[in-house]
Length: 269
Ligand SMILES: NC(=O)c1ccc[n+]([C@@H]2O[C@H](COP(=O)([O-])OP(=O)(O)OC[C@H]3O[C@@H](n4cnc5c(N)ncnc54)[C@H](OP(=O)(O)O)[C@@H]3O)[C@@H](O)[C@H]2O)c1
Picture 1: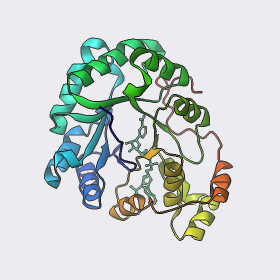
Picture 2: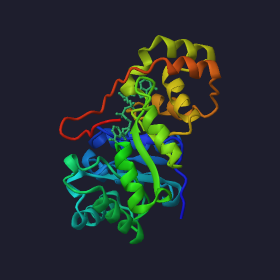
Picture 3: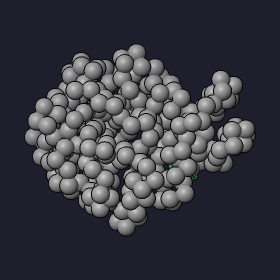
Picture 4: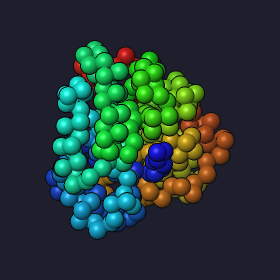
């Protein structure tokens, strides 16, 4: 079964306790229906609580979690996903991603992609995908389960890290891209070129950055603890950047990678 990933989702990285409960509650209230969490975020219980309290029907929400590197082995992946479901108070995820490739290939790509496919076959998740994969790792994932089984590759993308090689490679395989940290953790607000474009469209620089991603066909998952930001980040679908705007933003590429943890990050393309 093929699924459609809602273009705009709510990120929850770093958000804990009441902060994440409020962010998800506010997000759902202002119209988000796609929520992105992960086992390692330590907030699946709170995300589950906020979704349950929202009263929004389960089939209207699109929920993603990500398998942490400790749970990649074949005998660990399914039990860990069941534990995520329990915390999130769900019977099935919409999307489950491999959060990071196993450092140093300690567990082989083939092993955890096959286990993830098993989780899908067992009905624990409607769709599966990957995150932070190099092109070589994505190729191995495709060889294991097929490109059509990979619903998305979630990678860091914003105007300062445009990740063109990874985008191109996925595109050639017909694999959808989700842009994480699409606001460069708020840094886009200080960028003069984005500010100028924003002024021309009567929007703010964060909205320009999000529209830039959407216009390339990516899903985006910005996070915010403020209702006003959640609202404006959601209100971007009508923004039509011109070819000139897109060209100007292309010049902002500076290979500025914000998510690059030692011991975890692969050898990036
Ligand atoms: N797969 C992975 O390995 C991975 C890695 C990193 C992130 N992610 C996912 O991607 C999501 C987004 O990344 P992120 O949360 O790190 O960074 P982000 O969404 O790029 O930026 C969030 C930051 O921007 C600020 N912000 C948000 N909207 C704003 C607006 N309209 N105006 C001004 N500032 C604004 C927020 O502050 P306020 O709270 O004050 O609004 C927050 O400090 C994560 O939450 C997570 O779900 C995935």
